[in-house]
Image 1 (cartoon, one colour):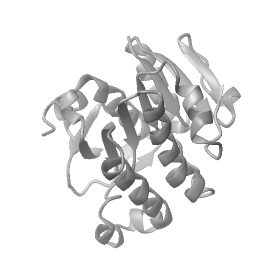
Image 2 (cartoon, helix red, strand yellow):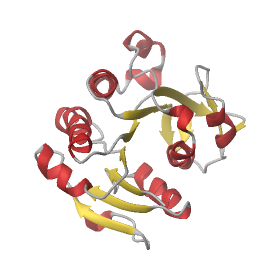
Image 3 (cartoon, helix red, strand yellow):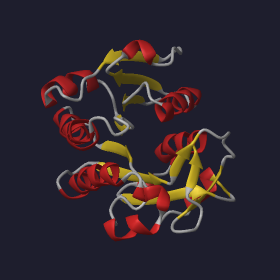
Length: 214
């Protein structure tokens, strides 16, 4: 059993992720600005988290956890302080309390700005991808965390299929349940540490796809 801290614990992806983490036997500390909106399940401890607060404040919430997931997002309303600097603060906070494993929910091609204009779905979220570009680069180059960065295609509300493709491709969508399950399953595959993984809807069962990451 692991104790997992989920930053952004009331969001759409987080809700499905928390379900999957608990189903796998983990305990979850879920941080959100509105903790009353966090899903209520046995094994889930909701805490009030403000990404505008200090690194020390965030670190105090993470004590006792083994892993941090960053799945917070301002949906375009607070990109600098939430999606960019908020993410960086959680990385620094994890380091302060001795947490090594850190999993970032990012965006397709977030580290490749020259690709953004090629996909209409990405052209509409350029500012978000800029925030992710800086947060992802900080995670890779300015921390010693055991990171995985998951870069899904555009999130949809469709039912999950349990199947994905990893790497480049034409499909530009991912059902939220598949993204959440992929995030949860990353914990089972140490070969994903230090990797940036682009995912999209596909034909390969999630665990088989992650097993092949090199």
